[in-house]
Image (cartoon, rainbow, N blue to C red; front, side):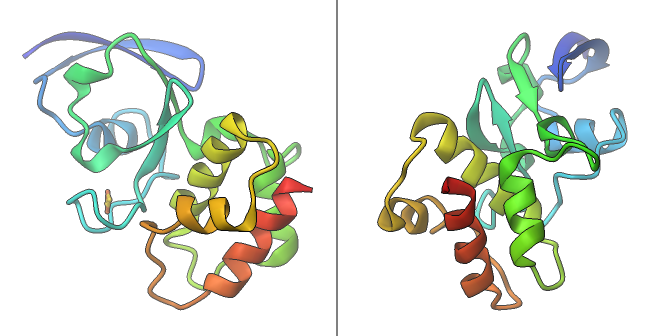
Length: 151
Ligand code: FES
């Protein structure tokens, strides 16, 4: 255990942690950020996706020791209810979810894609979301929302 400085959604906190603690646990339990979800815990479903220096990353298997001093953004840091991020607004407009458990990962992954490519092709969107799982089968609405976010 040691003091670890984490910068989450623009604010810095020092917590005493073991380096190998999964970032997801710290975000949810210590920061009270419930946007990132615990799905598989194995890096396979994408429900826990956050941005690390703007790049999509799976927080369930990301040791906090590796993200010290880096800019971590969660769903809560993208936008607010009053002023949603364009990707959040697109998912709301298209009702791009069924149960909503996967929604965090879908939105964060699309936000990361648009940050590096403001006009991705349909194929690029599909490819970016390829490893984000939705067990409800809301893929049609999710892809429609992602495409709307590009416009
Ligand atoms: Fe992290 Fe599934 S909970 S990828």
